[in-house]
Image 1 (spheres, rainbow, N blue to C red):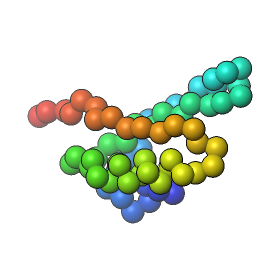
Image 2: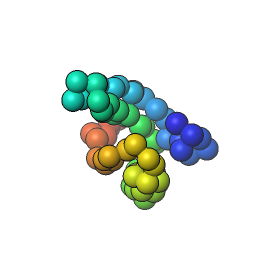
Image 3: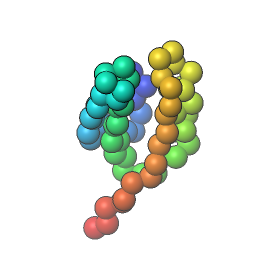
Image 4: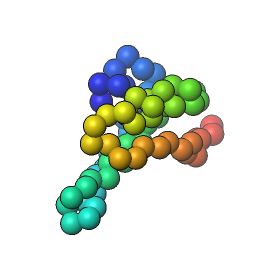
Length: 67
């Protein structure tokens, strides 16, 4: 969460699930922004990928709402 401080991203949803009988946990966060933030998300992914205990990290572009 400290990576999101001062960024134009809002945490919309957060979920976690035990994997491998509780030996690992999958965490999924849904972030919302008024504009596309591909470069910013890639930077966050790069920063998370070097953290100890994190074995995989990725991001994907979700459906955009239209008015």
